[in-house]
Length: 321
Image (tube, rainbow, N blue to C red; front, side):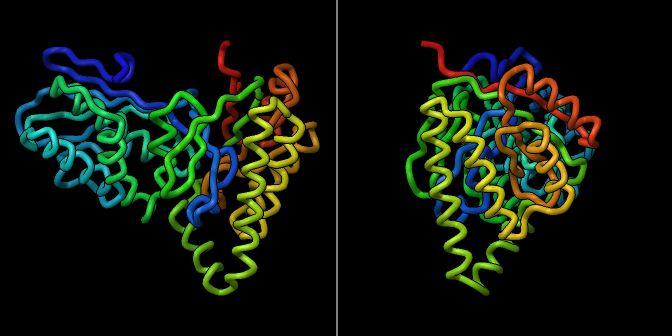
């Protein structure tokens, strides 16, 4: 356990977690294909626990009050908190859990998973107890099951990682070492997506046209393998091409709406090497690959002027030798 991720004092314990985004492979990953996810350090969550006599209480932007009366939208988190307290053999009482998040919800950035991880880390810190990675993931995924139905597990894994994650269901995860610096821009459409709804819509398409949809999912899998090769060979142009190819398939699956397409096509028109939606789609964010640092700054400004709600330029850096 890293000291920067969970700290404790006599009365206060803190847990933090960064965010995540899917570079490529969303939706196909639910059906057994690989996906690549990136840690996204520009937004995150802090969970602060204080000893306050009485019932367990939550203090967050969305809800302030007893854990037992939390709204349905926080049911997953409430169950995650209870399960963690039970696992740590702590009574479900005398705690105030303050959650501060800079991650916009419903944007495919792993908001629910980041909150769960920060909270679990803070509870372990409150109990002065170290954790193993698998303990953290198991407990946090209790919350994710409520958020996404059957979560792939990619969100929690990436949020606890410092490196890009290669993820395939039922297989051991792998970490990717980029061989060059890649300048990305994430742009928020300003509209919330619904991951669970988007995943269900693809599942329904799959039932109605299994062969056609399987071919689309297989194609996204092939593209994801090529994207990994692009990261590991510092090939920005190949990666950009793969982002565009993946977007074509996601549009065919019906998860990219007019608002996302507008931002994606604008980014490409302004010189992005590639651009696509990131996350569940039908709202949420896009990710674009800029040519270099200067182009990243220029494209960020242009996307803001074009109507993106928030824009985050960030660099995926090669691992220092």
